[in-house]
Image (cartoon, rainbow, N blue to C red; front, side, top):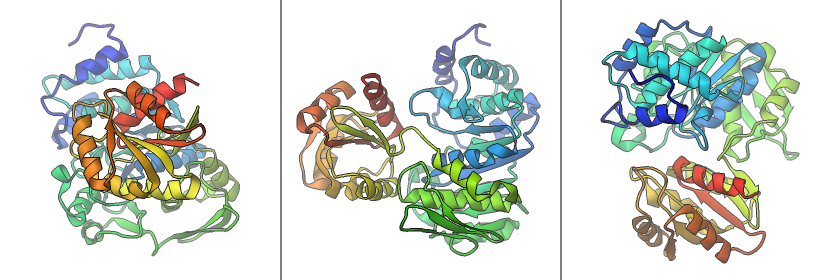
Length: 422
């Protein structure tokens, strides 16, 4: 046991040393400690998995379900502060509550070795119990079948999309990845698949276990209207004139439609009134998702870190913004650099590579070489976020757009610096 009285920062540093592996998929360790902790399960548990759109979908579900009691959300990674990962009724948990939860996990784990993410998952559940959370919405960290949150049996699940990412762990094609993500489904429980293209492995798994599959384009649909509003048709309900989601980007309608389908599948029709839906979705804000900070330039932050997310980012830029004068990019070493920069290349005038704030980051010089080869344009190398910001200011004129993207571990440090300078 660590000495009592550790701060949250001290605890987080300690969690990084507990396991020799940053990622160690499997449910046995989490399930064993969870059983020892004897936590009271929330009345309703929802798992949210998929390749892209998970964080947005969690926040949409939280807003829609706010009228049904106390909600708790667990997401990862964070953008600015660890506290963002564990929230009750939309408010990040305070340090003291997280520390108390960490102490409870530590007291129960004994000699069980937990990863950083596994420890945090158990702590989130402890925070939820202490807060009397009635609905827990848990975001899958990696994959689904063997992810720590899957140790908690859900009442329903939402799979946002399936595309190539984390291939080293999940497989090198969408069918293999889909099979892993489908592992959060449960027999007899609703399972919403929110994207138009669904791998066959997902439907086969749902059929094999007897999950209640609700599929985009078959069981529900949506359409944008010319006035900026949109409509949604579910299995037993239709809504029209819904206000646009507060989160920007064409893909956010897909995420919102999936969230509505899940609420309907749970039988919570009373939460699907037009006024409530418009207010809940229209007021959303989420750090690092097409977030704009006005400074000498117009800074756009987005955590896109795989080709699918980069494609969605490119579509959002085309819809809402002028082409970026500069893109500052930092990417982790297990990511598809060429696949990320390709959809952005026609929208970016200049490139700056920086090392993301992670031990797994690609070094800036190597990243610059790969970006230059992929785009056919020179890419500057920045030694630090401050250097990258200074370089971007030299290149971009007043009012020009500067894009910061490639990873949560890139967006966070830059967003913190630019927000502090306001």
